[in-house]
Length: 314
Image (cartoon, rainbow, N blue to C red; front, side):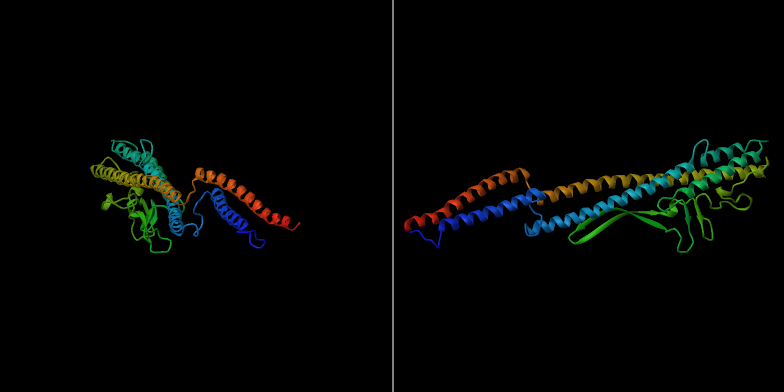
């Protein structure tokens, strides 16, 4: 084929090759700068759609993790107060039981013992009322029908999953009546420590037990026995409530660890779909840069062919 001034086939071929190399180079540079081989839907619509949905799921799991942290703090606050109410040899129900046993001693000054009992009663009520986290208190509850009444149960968000387009949110249900030590607003007291037990002269709630007027008579000794039994039962009830919260604490801790592990798994899954192989991309970048330089050189040589035509007319 003869030389043509209007149609430079070599230059056209070199230019087309250079354009192709430049396009590939731009793609590679974008992958290196973003760290992703699929950063937009145009890169790979299917993978981009899956990755977007999985990232959305991970955001929901992150919210679950935060909710579990809040729930753990709430449960820990209530658990701490319950164990404090149970007390030990110097406080709480344990000390109250010991004082009542001591009050059965003949000739003892029960008025002085009552002074200690009153302090314990006030201390337990204070601890129950102080067991509040983020406005939630399960130990001292309002059982009225008003808008400020304590809900009968709380659902602690514990998990999130999605099958197809249907999300499922799991929760741990906590029934407040199981942990209530004191109640307000209702017609009758229903808390563990303010429920009246017994009849007649022995009728009393742990919160209102008073032994100042008791004597060494058989009747008063029977009353003391009923108080001791009542406190023992309360210790078992509070211990059971604390054990239940302990189980909830363990479940929350397990779910928290699971959610964090699941989030890591989702991140790895997304990475496998859309992350760029930086080793391969760096190698490809060097190769494309070399091809671009050669393409520019080839185009320059092809353009010089047109200049050689001028020599034919000299």
